[in-house]
Each structure stands twice: as C-alpha cells, then as structure tokens.
Length: 174
Image (tube, rainbow, N blue to C red):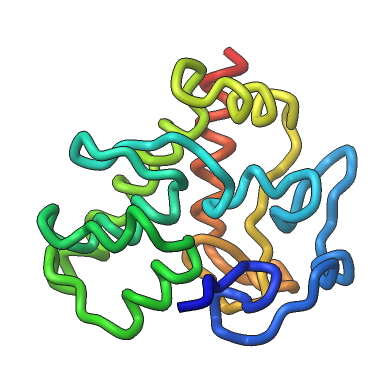
C-alpha cells in the first residue's frame, strides 16, 4: 500500500498541490493563520513524541485518531501516516466511544496530546518553536472544512486547536 502524504492529498481527500497554502495563509508579525511552511510544526501532523495509554506515537494526529479505539485495537496507528489514520477512521467505525461520548472527550484528549507535543522534556525543539511565536494569534485556517479545530479561509470556525496552542504557549511564557 502506497503511503498517503499530506502534500499530495488534503485531509478531506481533495488533491492538494505543494505550496498552495501560500494563496490563503496569513503569516506576519501579528498572526499565524494556516499552519504551513515554517509554521508546519504547529499542525497535528508535525513530528512529536506523544503518549497515549503509555504507548508512544510519532505525532499528535496519530495518537488522537488512535484514542478513538480500544487500546488492543490501536496497532495500525503505530505504522501509518497521519493522513492514513484519518482515512482509516472514516472507513471504519472506532470502538472506544459512542459519537456523543467522543464529542464530550475529544477536546481534553487533544489538549493533553498537544501539551505533550510542546513539553520541554519530551519535545524541546517544538517547545522552543512554540515559545518563539511570541504573542501572535494562532489560527488553524484550512480549506478542508474543519470548523471545530480550525477555521475556513474567511475565519469562520471555532479554532479550538489554535486556542489550545495559545493557552499552552501562554503557560510557557509566564
């Protein structure tokens, strides 16, 4: 099976061309809208050592997608790419939580994983990079329709990923 790479297919399954993000992302002295280019590390797809139930995953996205499954059914998420993990969960019914239970837990699970991604001892490079964003507004602007974790190109959406990142950065910069 050929690995699905983020630069080939976006998370919604639509084709994506490398560099296309430059057409809509805003990255300046005041805000980072769109976690691409030099700010790709802010994305959940970026490399990081994170743990879910004492098992190490290589990105927040992999651990987050694995969290939807009972621990004994998570082995796939140790060998796939982040995009493949999303695709897998779209094609298979996760067995850990009901839809309502997942909706109630997903924010806290994501926050815990992102805290690990930017923890000084686990991921010092990510820690320093997040710290270096200063007080810029962070927004997970995207074109794939994720209005819960991010926003669309017009700023519509909850931007929960950006909010968690800014919360963690604020605790680092205190």
